[in-house]
Image (cartoon, rainbow, N blue to C red; front, side):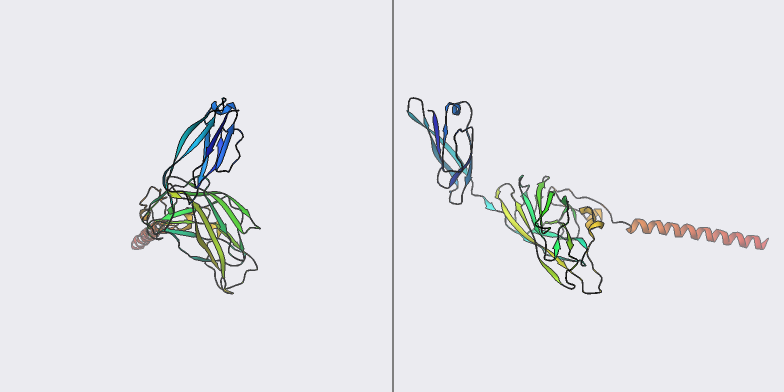
Length: 311
């Protein structure tokens, strides 16, 4: 019977073998059986372990022909020693929310390295864990933002956090991470903004700890890396006023923090969303115009009354 055997070099595991009848994976050596192996390509998927050396490593596929002669078919695999993503650090902040309230809680990372990280791959995820005495309500997506001025202003990020599902009795929120020409440059902040609901029985005046998010990030040129940052909530003291941002007042990332359009900038390829805050200068100008018009009308009426009196 026709057969073809692939022996993986040291540190390499064969994880799939398309076009290889009879293959059993994962394995360090796989044998393909039958005449169909000559009808098309055989594609091997491999996993390179930490013990594999960088550079080009080679192996030999032993091909047994119908006349029982064996021919060697060498193949080569280029292995690049990829380093994990580094320098993305947690920038903790806390919101204050009363028991029973749903609020947006920022999860923030800063690039403190000299590297500019690009888009990751399909399969990257973000898994959030709710702080103690809180849960995640159902939410299909999580708004994401970036800041290139250390948090003074924020724009919409080119990281898209969507396809979210809630599990573990509301304590886990799992989302897919997508990208739109991301360029995460040095000093740039990225933050995700999940909605969290504080339990009605949560204690007053307490720090609700244990909240986190783990971002599985696989930018080109780096090995997939799990990056963790915190989710922090405080409950107000009894009879005090809370300062949280209600979830129903924050349907999009853009409304999390109104900023002047002129202040939004980014040193990479991300697109800033320019907008102005509700009210603000525009409303003030309108009321100033109304006040001026009223003053003109009053002055005209006074002048007319004086003229009638003199007649």
